[in-house]
Image 1 (cartoon, rainbow, N blue to C red):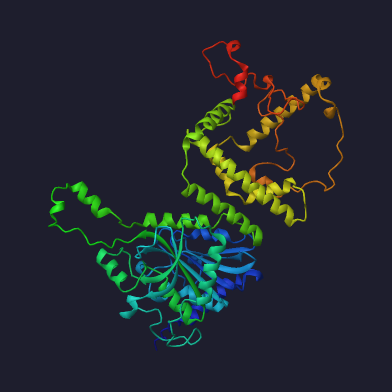
Image 2 (image 1 turned 60 degrees about the vertical axis):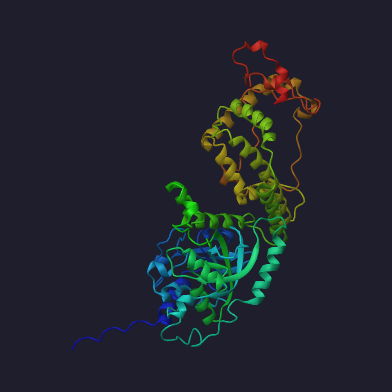
Length: 529
């Protein structure tokens, strides 16, 4: 007698297997997430907004019954962690799409697993084309309704046997997009965004299309005429399943391109008869969508949301406001780049004086100067926030170290002006220290009274905690201020008048006129650097 063929597992049984696999491998603090976030095309960087610890990541390929992703810009992993005020969350970094060949049930399978975790709210994001002519690339749209043509033809995520464990057979979708959550989203946007921001917030209707081809001009006009403000290839099936499972929904679209609504040029248009092939091609290419632009717009928006990483509450709001001001200034203000000419000349001279500095391009000093300005302001704010969090009214090195570890501007500056490895820094530091120690006995009689062996009392706060300072190549026992910037330079007299550098400091520093003998170079020129 032939053995009985195994029965296919139900959708509920498959979801239970995936849920059990994940929960067994999660720490206790992350086993009960309250909010799920789906990161759309290019928005995977949003995963960096959750705290570093505790944190757990799972590749989709390791989770039973999860779909495998094939689309660029979708990493394909679940990230569990804590967000903002220690809210347990799970992030879907990348989603499956129907056009990849997955069934509509596979596309929505992760949402059913979230139901078993007890998720109360899901936030979905996507990249979409703008059908509404009032939308600009980079704008964000809160979805308040959708159009699902595929469902009209029977391609529906709830088609088939209904698992009663998830929800009813006939769920209503007239209230699919939670009004209270949308209201809170508008309030939060006003709280963190200035009136001069180029990125605007709207509400609109999202239309789902199967893809992977982008829409034709006629299709865009049709969707616009039936009430769609946006068009995309995801989100709606997930929302239908989420509402079937009783999960509250908040959905955002990032406008990554403006759909072309004008009719295609006609071949019998007499205005086109005199145009050559290149001109005709440029007309057809106008407004044409491509996946690379979609991903880039998503990455830019994700970075905008990361400038306040690691902060909470009032401190987070302060830094968000500061960075929004910086972004608005760089994007909207008129910049007179002629004002950079003098600082550029000064910086280039100083850079040439240090043989360890390797300049990448002539524009690097301008970026470096602007980056330093932004970096110092952000660093100061973060350092004081860290000090206040630790009930201190004075800054310690640990505060600066903590600020450095959270600032992306530090890495930006290092990339602009690369230096040698940390080992060579330590070597030069030890050589400079030895040279300073050897010359101290010879010059000791010339030092002002404040430097003649006065023993400073220990700081009442005790030795500083260097925290994560080592992450930036500075050891805990290493002084971050070098004895001299250039080997052999003589330190200036602290009693000298402010703003009057001693000429011997600059002796041998550089020679701006190599064709003249050294004695003909005016030392006073150093005061103009």
